[in-house]
Length: 420
Image 1 (cartoon, helix red, strand yellow):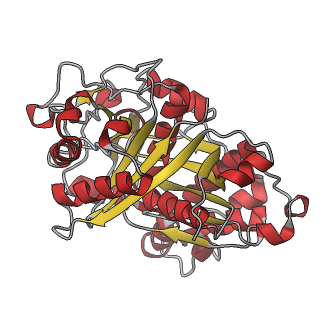
Image 2 (image 1 turned 120 degrees about the vertical axis):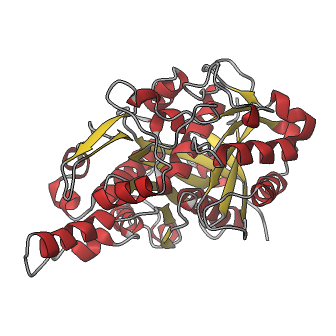
Image 3 (image 1 turned 30 degrees about the vertical axis):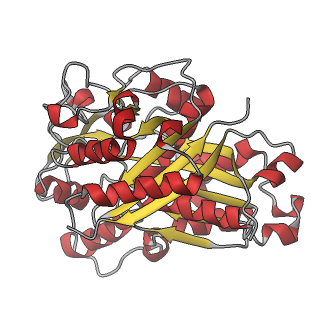
């Protein structure tokens, strides 16, 4: 079987910063936190928590009212990101403008952890709180986890694989990896992939609160609530957003004169097979080594790692220990940052938005920081080169993006810088 090089020809992101992928990356590079305070009046009692919201996103303006009404918010965010990536790739939205036979093999693989949970929660509230005997007839199609890939495939005329991946916080990392494999094998010349999630459902917020892993904070302290690798870290901050990549066979992209923003070269996945919610170093080590081997890269080839880094007491030291084991003596000079400190933890969309950050780091030859970390590094998290402030003009050849999830699912993506 011929292995095809896989180019990244489109990047899309719907983030709390607004704008496009370049705006998103510049704000990360500046160390700018998007964390604010979410206050909900939902029964049985109000709740206030640090959160990351895409307040400037207007789904009707991006998608049109009829299409937007068919979707729950996670799908609106995801489809908008996918369209943004598709348009940047310079591919026609109208299927009639492309080779119809070729397009029948193009597809979409999407990642989400929660999907349209809010549609089901809303239906339950209508019946059990308000006493109504029916729910919206759109509840099923809004609530299904495969809504994004379904809408993207329908709107763009993609006749190949259309499926979703759900593996908690590794969902979109796995989705991107599986899409990469389809293009590399020649099964598809073009794949749209990424992830989206909305974590502001009242029941979701209460569930994470009950696990005692959410960072506290008020209006004054919320922006710095998420502090991965810090000695005083207090937990994660949830958020919402969507991110997408268009992956394309290298020869196909070159033949149509597409701009190549980067290259995906490896994918490693593993299961800790140890504990449902407690991460395990050896499981992460296996995924890291699998990604490097798949990419044909040595540890010394990697110039940056976008860490999973959730700011939990147990997760952060385990990830650093895994990196130190894989990179050995080179770990001390390995730049590592956790951009969740600024854009929050998007659960099933985390792998996608962090993959975008990693691809842009390679394209721009710049490394975003872990915000709020200077002077606070936990001794248990030492051993790597923590990026405390954004770095520009960094010669980067290749980078990794980590996604580690409840259930023990691990995914690591390896990327290479675009040709100069």
